[in-house]
Length: 604
Image (cartoon, rainbow, N blue to C red; front, side, top):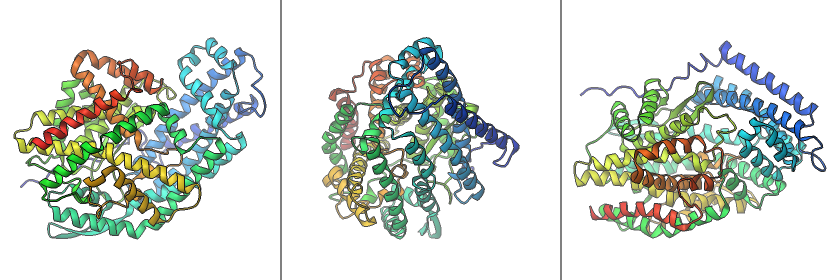
């Protein structure tokens, strides 16, 4: 039996030769020098939130200032994103790398200066009043960035005084950001002793979690029980981190005049609150159909309801276990059927070592894609285990990379895509690969296995995401009154799962520790990083239905959509495709696609 080829690690040496290289240091020096020049300009031209009344300048003066600020910010943001991603490439794959962690700490100080400059610019724009539109009319560059400038003006209403905003940014490095780093370090370095195939070894937490889709139910249960025990041992520092982060958000939201913790998340998502409520209502109405799926799965396993460790159990039968080269060829073939541009992009990602796929100690769990604007490339992290699920994940993350590719000629400000639309290309690419897998199924048992993989994902994005939304909402409500214990976090998580999973999940065996290892909860500037996934799935399904109707004619418009996701509200971009996000029917129609998968699942 031949040994499978080693899984790839990503290569970022074309960005900089090393963290201690002259090239890296030169860009770091340029970044800091440009920030100092910008800070001096802001001070000399009184670019900050005015203490009283509107800014007293002429439209021409404002237009000239906007030109300088837009050009400088675009340059700084491109370099900051590139250098930040470069450092993260080391930290995310090896949390033991002290040099990279030190570089990240130093770099975060620079980021604070950039965020302070952005805050001053946003406050100043908010104080322009009618001058803003007059200045935009005088500047072609401002016209190119009009959407972002108007958004800055709107969001400036929720700023504290300039001094308070500056202080909040400075304190974040040793406050909320430090709690974020703690969660990442604890979870990435957690290893557990586990016996698998007669061999006892230390498994990193992501590898243990991945055993939830092992074909052997006994192994799944032991992995679940081992995981529960492991999180029990580190729950206190993680609870401290979550309390610190959510407490910071509550305090800042109150000082900034936000309606609630959800307010800033909705604005960042660039959707209307009513759109979110409409989508959530449709999701809630879909729970009975998902419970049908859970019960059908339990019945196949000879149980009345599913314990957590069986939620991800494979069903049906497939002999397909992908090597990484096989996954590559399958994805490239399916992407080629959609668009040569997409397949050529993915081939470049594979050929140029943009992907880090191996599970190993010190590497963070999950999957993500990050952009490197200065070299117009992306890097993709996942923990590949050969399952069809991780093939879908790879296609998903390549979709994010393709999104970056389509927007590569846009400026940094124009590329600022909300989380809701950031999932557009990833869901499309995942759907392309899923549909091909179903069509190529060699037997009903193989079709069942493929449907199972998809429905596991769909149920996580609709049912589990809703539970995470409820969890975070309740945590914010309680955290505004006092800190929460680790056991209280567990209680809220189980209660949230009870609401969404209902009798589809065995009440004795939920996952009370989901809050510990999901990094989405641990970002002070990114609350409610849950509902955008559901938005992305349902929006992506809706777009795929249009693609099925229109074929090749859809592709060029779709690429134009991906290029412009940072330049309009979600409702307006969707309207170009005849989609009304304010209508319950759109969300119901997308959920009906999943319902038909469940119907087929029950028939097989």
